[in-house]
Length: 314
Image (cartoon, rainbow, N blue to C red):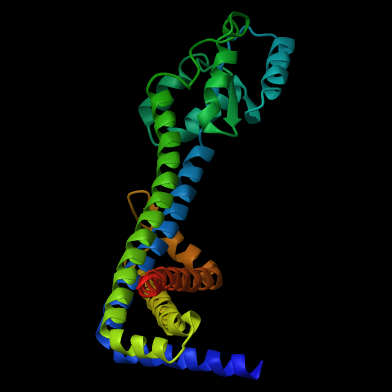
């Protein structure tokens, strides 16, 4: 056990010395890892923010079913009962003609002309059912139910899920799916790019220490002992890069949140992004360091394995 500990300590020490000796290569490699980890972290937070924004939008999406004035109580209750049985229905609210009129007045309270016009006639607004779905991607199943002839005759006009509104809802649903997929793909692509750059950095380091490594092999050093310092060196790259990346993102969100306040950039709500970052900071630190270590160590293992195989074939 003591011998293994000494060997491990020598490997770690050699890795630290290698990092200091190849400072310029180390700085270049860490700079690339900082950029990669920062982009990966920003992609994850942006995806979470966009998902939250889209979730808030979709939560407000409902289907309005406008009922004929002649509908009977038992017909209305039966329709509500049948709609509740649909799998994708989250909730349903009945809005009477009187309630619809009160809502109309509240929404147009600053428009004197509209209020005057509506007060001079009998209530023209129909009663309605406000249906809120679980999944906006499956609203079509609800629409198909409402298009049945026996249901259609209870409606005074088309449901709100039609025409331009239908297209808008469908676009929101597709946008949510696209942003999630784009976030995962972006993280994967940048991880591969970083690994390739670290791989080439280690190959350059191996080339610079070629004579030293040959001497170590002649003296009977094991593959693990030769490979170890490179793995430790790249793990240190990952740890330092992760810390710098988190510091940069923290400063970026703090400055952006302070400067923009409650505003947003398109669908990206800066205040939510900053809040999400702070609430999950410990998890983010752990994940970033783990990613940095994984990217660095795996790149070093592949690079040194190819070198060792090449040497053994000779």
